Length: 89
Image 1 (tube, rainbow, N blue to C red):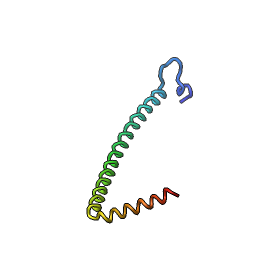
Image 2 (image 1 turned 135 degrees about the vertical axis):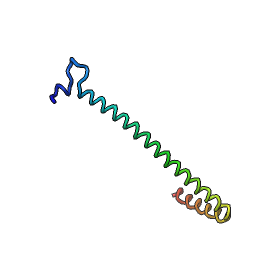
Image 3 (image 1 turned 60 degrees about the vertical axis):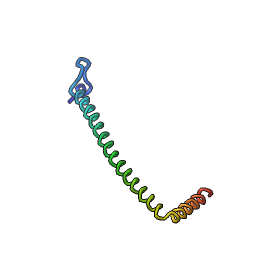
Image 4 (image 1 turned 45 degrees about the horizontal axis):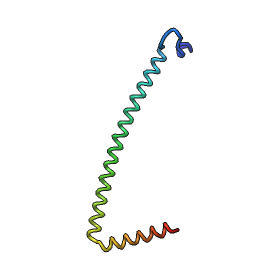
């Protein structure tokens, strides 16, 4: 293939190389759209699993607080004290 075929001539509107480039561009666009949709689908699945796990953890924490309210208050006071120490430094 010579360079005039790659560059195209002024008399013909498109050459086989230009057609190939356009086809590749279209295929890359389709591939990009497919990858985006797959990523969104996977991200949605992961986000849903994280939300479910967080909800279960919150429920377990709430039931532990209801079972032992005084212990929960002492732990909360201790955590607050530690955060206060860290913030004041």
